[in-house]
Length: 163
Image 1 (cartoon, rainbow, N blue to C red):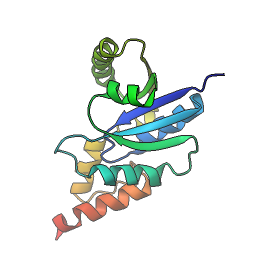
Image 2 (image 1 turned 60 degrees about the vertical axis):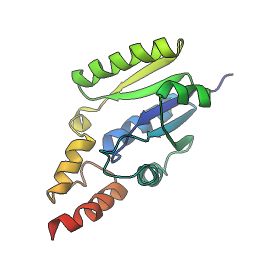
Image 3 (image 1 turned 90 degrees about the vertical axis):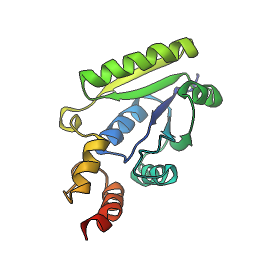
Image 4 (image 1 turned 120 degrees about the vertical axis):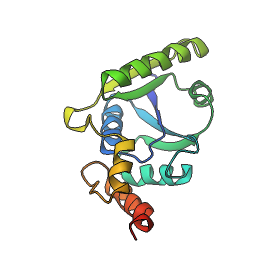
């Protein structure tokens, strides 16, 4: 039998409980899931290495899950790793519209690639990395939005701003 292997890409800046929920559910659907942390742009709060480390700490309870980094086009990473399925989380209709556009482009660039959308659980649907960073920047409690490692990293990152 062929192994069912999926790629879960994102910037994860920082990883949220919503991200981890999607990852947990993806590992139940696939034999293996590779989380691909995108290099991102200059607007990321955490470095690529920090984001990978936070995900490794936060997802250490999951087996059959590998955390890697990548730069460039998603389809190139799919080719490099010989993975044909991408998992994405959908929080809202706006997420769906954005993902639908990306799928259209990616299917032209890599025909035959498949995309699985997992809907966010209602209690996690409002969580976004951007909002979490804003709450942390203003000394709000982010413990209900991110795993402990990410919460500690956010407190440390913004500690100097509160002096």
